[in-house]
Image (cartoon, rainbow, N blue to C red; front, side, top):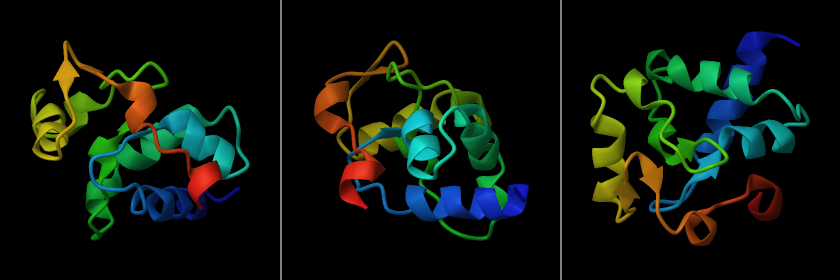
Length: 109
């Protein structure tokens, strides 16, 4: 599979994650038919700032609700600040109420 094509498909899914909700790298990979490619979703999001589009990558966390991508936001607190600006509570780099806020693309797209 062409990485750029996969990356663009990731971006299209992430752009649809609603304000104040979160999803996971694995949920996106599974939705795209690439279960087990969560790391590749992460790589796509690490470079999303070069896409020229507004990709809300801060809404994607690991399966435990941890902000594992936080170092890719130009400061270790930026991802947390972006989530908190949307009403998401983050404690010790983990989303609280993860199950309640989780948005599954397989259910909503």
